[in-house]
Length: 72
Image (tube, rainbow, N blue to C red; front, top):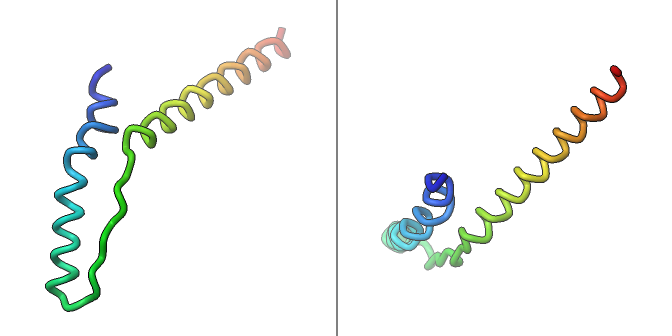
C-alpha cells in the first residue's frame, strides 16, 4: 500500500534534484550552453496516474457488468 506512493512520488522528489545537477554539470563540462531542467511536481504526476488507473478499473468493471447482463 505504501510502496506505490513511495516509488511514484517520494523517491523521484528526492532523486530528481541530484539528477538535474549531474545533467547540468555534464552539459556544461561538455562545452554546451547551460541546460537547466525545470522542476517536476512528481506528487501531481503520481496522483494523475492513480486517478487514471481508478477510472480505467471502473470502466472495466462497468464493461464486465454490461457483458454479464447481455449473457443473462
